[in-house]
Length: 484
Ligand code: SAH
Image (tube, rainbow, N blue to C red; front, top):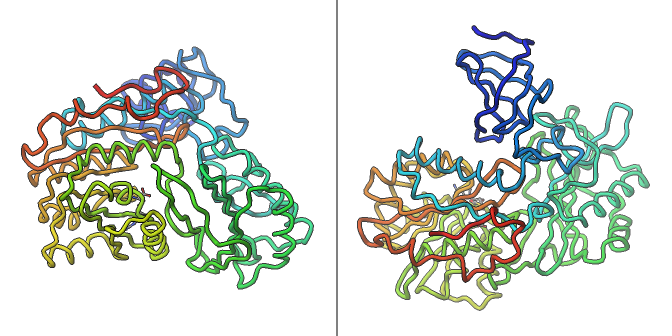
């Protein structure tokens, strides 16, 4: 073993892994050092040694990478939210594009040239329209409300976060004051006692409607009138206040029952020119502007024709399918969360869309049912959670023989794993576009076009251009580029 725990070794960081941490080599052994980046030379203290690799932390920086910047957040490195606040944004985009290309090459076994340049974000701060903020107490009983420390359940008490809209800090401050004023019992996760577990905030950015949801370990929220009054006084765009009941001893944040205590119980946002109802339990993309770009790319890739039937699997509140509905004969959306499906139906109605049908079911079960009814969609949209699609689902989709499949993914490695299976079953991956939906974190979204045989030819790449989307005003030219 060339190194052991507590050794301090000098390392040049030569690459960055998929979690955003730097990798250097010491006597042939890969050493992972968080908060470093390509080009840094550091003295690193070894924390843990495995057979072929080791983990270390920065002891001191000997030479700074030219991509290194001073973090603009005091909590960076303590809180587990961001991973890339120490690099300039153009370098962050390069890292993320590389991450997608690597997965496409190493896991899917495909030519990384099918990956277009990443689409960067106009605004890399304040973009998250949703925050689920843990509430706890320290050992002296002081209220702690803020963010979980890295890899831990310890709460860092802070009302501001650069990823969130500034108004969220006002909500957090008012909420904390209410907790103090009325001596509200705070949830203790070890003892499973107390009442208030999480403060959950959502903002519909386009309409400016704000939702506050209080997650409680009880059947009743005490002093609710007082809370509503304080929020109404301090937050001019407060639209609704909801209580969510979560009495289970669990790490899952929200329970499946809600009660509205002020306003309509939901907010409405606009996306791609359509209105969308967002309920507390429904999925909604956290970065509205970048979601519009993802949906636009998905629509271009789908190359919709009037007679197409679109199957939108993992449809959430129907957003992707509904933005396609006016171009096709029918849209069928499938989603497992009942509240999302209720919202999807309402979303179709409020936008005057009458050719969309939504099914509340597991994606694979619904696809098999549709197949047995001889419904064979010409276009399938896949937008699964991080774990990707099951083999069973891929088989069912392949059996439906859609002309095109548009795969929207938030995890390049499960995406690449699934693309490999589609390739083995006769689909070819035409192109992929990474989009930076989650600036400053290590996560990246990717939209991929797959098609059967030669149906699409190479033309898609030529026809698709970002020029006619509103891409003006980016923070710097290196942050986005047009698809060749
Ligand atoms: N396409 C939507 C939602 C994408 S997030 C949008 O862009 O807003 C993924 C969605 O898949 C979530 O809404 C989640 O509830 C849903 N989901 C997770 N597992 C599922 C399954 N097995 N079958 C159907 N939907 C599922």
